[in-house]
Amino acid sequence: MIISVDDVVAGAIDEASADLRKLSLAIHDNPELALKEDKACHLLVHYLESRGYTVQRNVAGLSTAFASTHVSSAGAHGLHIGFCSEYDALPGIGHGCGHNLIAISGVAMFLATTRVMDRCRIPGTVKLYGTPAEEAIGGKITMLDHGVFDDRDLLMMLHPTAGYSGAWHSQCCLSMRIEYFGKASHAAMAPWDGINAGTAANIAMLSMGALREQLKPDWRTHGIITNGGEAANVIPEYSSIEYTIRTAWASELQVLRERTLRVFEAAALATGCTHKVTEEFAYLDNQDNPVLGRLYEEIMESEYHSPPERDVGGSTDFGNLSQRFISLHGMFDLAGTRVPNHTVEFTKEARSVEAHRRAIFAAKTGARVVARCLVDEDFWKQVKKAHEERQQSSGAH
Image 1 (cartoon, one colour):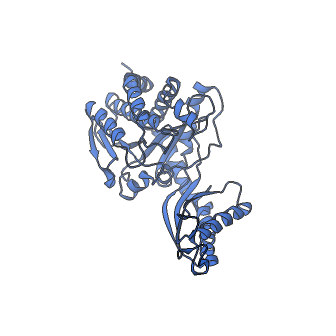
Image 2 (cartoon, rainbow, N blue to C red):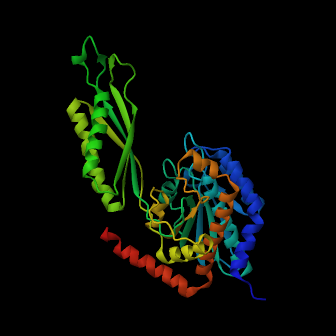
Image 3 (tube, one colour):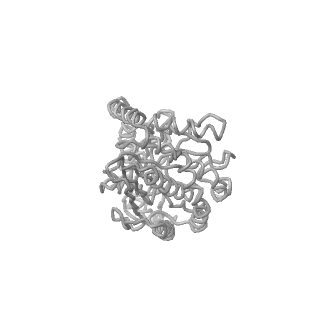
């Protein structure tokens, strides 16, 4: 009997859909911030183990990271595939980026790919990575630095937004903490004895605002003063800023970084403060494999009957993986309402039946793209060629 790979994918995911819906709602209704995703991690690990998969916990020293591995019944000497699930929430608005759906779409693709390998006797291995803290420190970067992904031929994840795309070029993103150190004094009785760290923070913010008029259209800078002083009649001896800069390409990020650092230093010089800059994390631009992306978009368009989205915006730590590995960060439309990410409205729609239906379809699409790599040698050669060409030309930006 001839086995249809697409049917195997659809069957595996449809069988799990009800369970995945329960997982999604449980994660959504119990939002947890970066590195505190204990419930979500436990739910996902427990579900995988209940399906007979082995799971490694505390991956890369992160207590809420995990990895589950399946070796094909035909042996391990084929392609090594990896999927990523995210499950951290945003402060204040919960799952306003739909990470509950990212979590289950990763599980769905993992289940489907293991079924394809076993049913079709295709050698290889497939891993599901639980990747915490995407919204804060970039858990994937920590895992990357620990070599967690080193043996993978292909990495993939899916993300809900307004629209769909298999060619999302995200923004690079560098977050930093700036601290100014001055000298406290009574603001009325002896202001001349003080060194105002609060003023340094204000000058820094105003100067960054002035710098914006000379930045490229696709560069972004934004931040907040997190500590500007404690009392109006005391010259503050300490202030702090959380700041983020974004550019289209990794090479441009260093240019903007240098200009930004000079602004922060100038604010210290202007006020007589000392200062310290702590670079917290840097997300590089996501670069989807064009061959994988085209197939993903072709399948998605058959469902949406509309062209893909090209100007989505935002940043992701998956971009760091895409710089090294063959990868696809597939975007799917949350619910067809054009609600933007990181809003209360997005949070509400991320638990809807329609959002689940679309996440399931996107997971089937992603798994079909991976299956094509497994069964079509010529297609996989095209994928690898596109990756090699991009690597060779990466210096152009």
